[in-house]
Image (cartoon, rainbow, N blue to C red):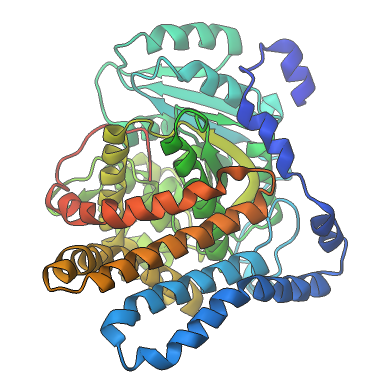
Length: 498
């Protein structure tokens, strides 16, 4: 059923300022000219334009390179971080293509493409959501799911209520009757992963999609992700593009919105050029059924450091897709009696994972400092757990994916050490200049990411908030890694998957 017919049948979702402002980012003159060019010419010109934009940063590196051998401890960390930032920006802006809009240039060889079964031209989609105590957001989220411009006969929406106690169930019962969705009401709190796996027990789609209970999707977001999977059988999963829904509330939410844009448009885009996106993020995570079905019991029953790992980490589920050639058989043997394995044994394949920039979704970001810190601790714990799994095989996927993954991991692990050295040790030893140099480098990096945001969002002035996130990361968030590791056995129900 078309979106217009769906609107006539179902009440519309609440109007969203973010949806209206999205029209400001429609392709401009340069983008339209590039899109009209021959692919080889377009990619060549993009490389040249990207290098021109990065030239000031390259000149800074060239100027500091001769001094690096003289002061490796003082300049080495900043030099390495700036080099990595330049490389990621270059890859993202010169090589990335949206797989829902055009056929990707970097694909497996024709003889290898035969290893990936084609999806139907209009596959059935099971769209899943787990919720617990989300009365303020759940109606808008479910309505945006139901208003997706995908054929109604091919869209199965399943919502699992994990024993909510705040009135969420009453809202879901009303929506169930009105919209014809399927709602599972659990009588025992199982946690988010188990709740989603419960939904997968009755999901019969060729594609299984997930979203979070505080998100709103653009009408075409799901269909764009499906199109990317249909047109590229080698893709086992794709991530949508998330921004902050409550962006106008505070300076804090504005800064997070700019940060989200960079994490998707730059970081995920760079990984996507190698077919190795390492986190298909929770706001819109779309998987082929045959890429994850056998591994759902391993995901639900994941254990780490001798205890159940309760966080519903989509990093881990993404890891099962990326690494099933090397870890798939072992995982299936561990859960050989599960119906998810016995019902049908899907072959282990060298899946690729992409990112669909045009699949827009908006999520409520933390508005208070306390909730933000809780979110960051959850994310750090998921990063640590995933490092021990995905990190064990990522080197097998090639130099590019390995460099991006291990480079990022090294930066995260080194961050608390560098923060202590520059913010504590240096001032105590009379090296305040080193502290100043470190903070200037942090601000410079934030400005670079802010300008990247400005390139993609020329009418949005929020780019200036990006250095604030860089300072917050250096001064505070870096210290959370050791704390998260020390408390990693503590688990809570959390809607955020990453």
